[in-house]
Length: 175
Image (cartoon, rainbow, N blue to C red; front, side):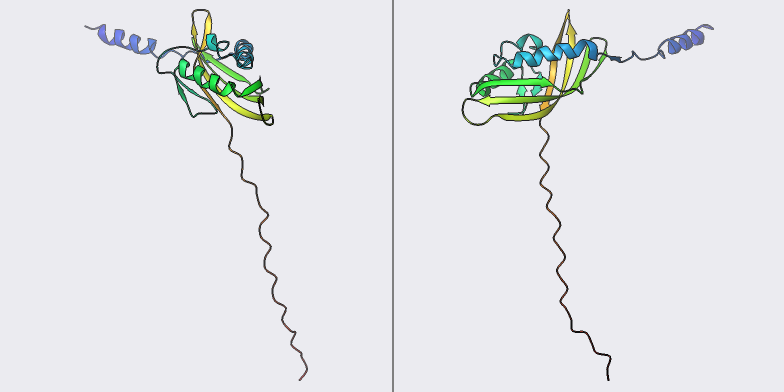
């Protein structure tokens, strides 16, 4: 019984070790994400499919509609949108960042896109993205994605000019 406090103290100290370090994973994951967006740029939803987890209940936020629940919904939604396009080009911006802790990684980035619709003018713009990836076997799979376009700031109108003061007649100093 005399050793119980020593054993408990040792157990507490063992549990106070450092948390696993977060690694900078950009060197590994940037080429991976470039492949993901090159696959989307083919307009064939089957091409990016291998990069996404297929678990029921996963949520993917895209530009439109608001969200997809599960890969099959995401794939179907993209097919419908892509049916209206001749081409799309999507490229990662230069600000890509990635972090990793064990078999989980998260990436943040901006995208530049150029969509050529079958009718109408090109749609060019920028978006921002955040993905959560999980290493399964030898593959990194996206388990959550959030892509959005920043709201346009309303045009700032020049403040109204102050109303001119009515001119008043000068009073004469003569009496």
